[in-house]
Length: 527
Image (cartoon, rainbow, N blue to C red; front, side, top):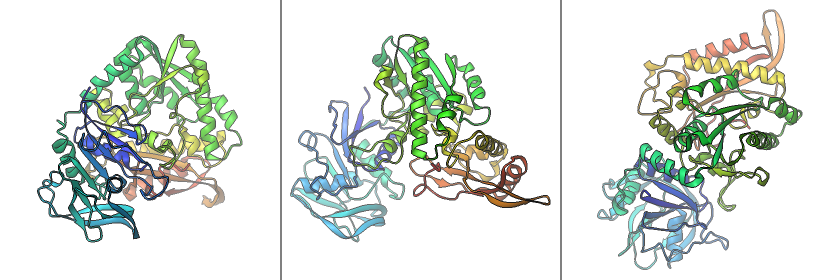
């Protein structure tokens, strides 16, 4: 097994960013809830304690026994993790007069600290906490301060134990990657040799060990995640893998046929399951977004149950679940906030009698794409935009009807074709799927794009006639992991042309708007 760093999650929504930064350093890491600490064997090179929405001073604050960790393994506490180290070992943590949130300037106090090696004497850090460490425990010393936080970073003498009250994992901490690199590569002694090829090797081995000679069913969606999961499983178990692609009646224009065609060259055993009538029948009259998600999730599972029985002796269901799905779908023991539900996260009903395998569960989208390229998957599949599990159901605000689906499909098709056909090479934008290269088209430059059909009518004039029809909203964002996203700054000529084409060609639409909301506070999808 490869060397690794264990991240213990106390419920922060940005814990996964710690993992991202470590993996950018080619250091493998695993994230676990604070109350489910794994066995710490020789492969573990260090431990990181994450942030949390909780206060260490609360009576129900998350607690952890550090007797087998502190002083045994290199240890780094971040934000809540730092405050817990101070509080647990005899220091004082007090509520701040005002919440310390946003940019701050860190001044290095101990230049000889291994954690701050190569960090400038003054640099920007990002704070996000309501408490502050007013007194360090005995045996601890300050290694960095800010104007308002004296004990911004500290270490324990005679130990490889360090703590920072800021967030080195976020973009706004300018030396964050260096600090995490100092911990992982320097203090922990990691080699930094975790690559897509090494992930493939270890994952294929793990799959073979996990499933043995059992048959596995995989739910294909045509997206990057399920495609890469299929390629990994196919490499590991070959003919014992059967893929099922469910047509839920909510797919984009011609998507069902196109997806089935695209997999022929990958030598995958794919079954097409057309359950569109069943899905649309049960969704009729339903407007609540969470109810729509639950119906789609239930029918998705029921459809799998039906087609799984045709495979014979299948014991596993594989899914292309990735880490943002996990963190957004289930908080850590009720501490992290639940953002939304996903039908592809959280296990399976007992009636299916299938166990679950998720080979990509700990990866981020950009990592999945790198693994896909290493597997030799065509770039048109690897570079495909994410598409939500509930499909167009959450891009139609309110009740779903055949007519609304027609309007949305036609508008979305025009929009996506426009993105694919617009040459943006002169703009020198990074590719969303691989920032190391420049995007050739707007589709390449954008992380995710789609059209939303709004549940309102707007007045318009077409020819000499007054119209009263639907507006549609265009959505396009740039991101790296879907946890945060910013709206894409389109060239005006593109917006003008695509708006004109949608209004002229899609009956039922007389107005096009562009969503310029970022995540947070808005989500990428509207429902």
